[in-house]
Each structure stands twice: as structure tokens, then as C-alpha cells.
Image 1 (cartoon, rainbow, N blue to C red):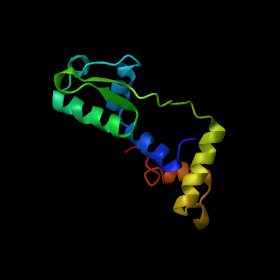
Image 2: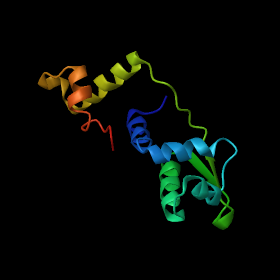
Image 3: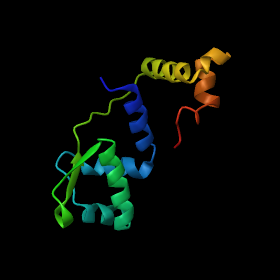
Image 4: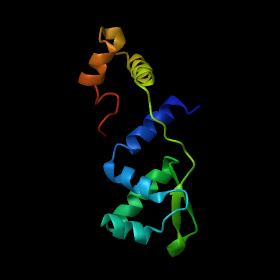
Length: 121
């Protein structure tokens, strides 16, 4: 099972719509950065920035070097989270941050304190 802090870190990485689109485009067979930059109309440096973040978060891996690099999914599975699991995660985050000890309920934490738990980064 994935460690809680790692799950939060990956969620932050995937909070960027651009990174999600790039990650989806990688696929299991991989893509060359030049093709990705053209597809998303991104400067090579911008694409490189997003790819490096995906690799660091272990959501993508890279093969080759120099101009022959290919990026692909790392094998990390992303799963749909049920409402029950989301509630458990929210409770765990809230508890870890001490928000429930201050009289907040889980729904309030999800709405009012979403920046504290890292949503929208």
C-alpha cells in the first residue's frame, strides 16, 4: 500500500491539468518529448519541467538519454477513490493536522480548509 505522505505528494503533482494531460498522453509504450511538446503546444523547457516532476513523483519513467529519451508510465496505478475512502483520507488528514481536535467536522474540513490539506496546489 502507498504511504500516506506519498499519496498526498502525488495528488499535488496531479493537481495540474497540464501534467494530467501529459501523463495521460505518455501511455505504457512511451512518447518522445518533441512529439509531446508539439501535441500540447508547449515550449521544450516547459514540457521538460512537467516531465521531471512526473518522474520525481514516480508517476513516469524515462529511458534513453539526450535526444533519444522516451517517457512512459511508471507502472504506478491510479485508482478511483470511493466516497468512503475519501472520507477516511479526509479524516486522516484532518486528524494529522489537528483540525478535528478543534471542533471541525470532516465536511467543514473538506470545504473550508481545503487549502490546508493541499487541494488546489
